[in-house]
Image (cartoon, rainbow, N blue to C red):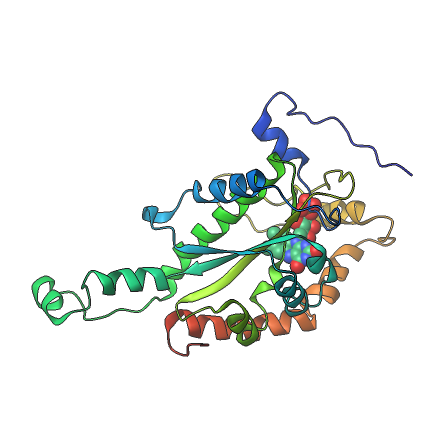
Amino acid sequence: MAETQAPSPYADNAVLDVIEQRSSTRQFKQGVQPTDEQRAAVLHAATRAPSAGAMMMYSIIDVRKQETLDRLSVLCDNQPFIAKAPWALVFVVDYAKWIDLFEHVGCFTPEFVERTGKAPRRSSHMGDFSIAAQDTVIAAQTAAIAAEAVGLGSCYIGDVVEQAEQMAELLDLPAHTMPLSMLVLGTPAKERPATPHPVENIVMLERYRRADAKTLDAQVAEMDAMFRPHAKEAGERVVDIYTRKHTSTFMAEMDRSVRAWFANWTGEKPLR
Ligand SMILES: Cc1cc2nc3c(=O)[nH]c(=O)nc-3n(C[C@H](O)[C@H](O)[C@H](O)COP(=O)(O)O)c2cc1C
């Protein structure tokens, strides 16, 4: 049965309309590569994203080789559709480039330390991570919206943080980096109606409000409605998330792997 979609309420605003119409793409037209113009538009848009102190604390690994896509598909919790996408962008939180710059201009020399009174050498820590990670994800989302605007579909792959040791080797990632977001991209194989998103318990006026039972009931009902026909009893979507995601083996691997990435980030235990 053909899926129908309500008309976008933002049809007269190009930017809002792209945001409204976007949905994740997991099926790509086979044998169709993004054009050079599409690739350039997406990568340029990413670099136009805001960035803390304009430091651009990220790198984008542009993956086009089938063998690398095949490997990513396995390392990212065995998701075969990754290998069927013609293009992947791995967004790497990157402080290595700043450490290289500091070194390059002489910030670590004894003369510099004496002249400025600054600590001899500081690694990247959690404070640096908190801003660098924002830079990285904002660049990724700007790329995702730009992709949509030039006719490419995309899907995030959260599992890119798994299998730290093998991922560091595959992408040659040095200390003070961590791959945080990945997008797979290509021409969508079919129409993708925008998926409904929950709205309950998200925006809180002026201060944080812990949901009361009434709000939680509303949230559960909203999620079950979106999860039909799978959800037959109240709360089934929340139980599904608990069993399939919160307590999954992939989440256990994510926990383990992200700890390894943090040790790589601070330089405490580099993966390469
Ligand atoms: C951080 C993040 C990680 C995600 N990881 C995956 C993934 O590994 N595999 C996948 O098929 N979809 C993944 N998605 C896509 C979400 O499932 C999708 O965004 C969500 O279901 C909402 O649907 P929509 O994007 O079509 O609106 C991810 C999305 C985000 C934001």
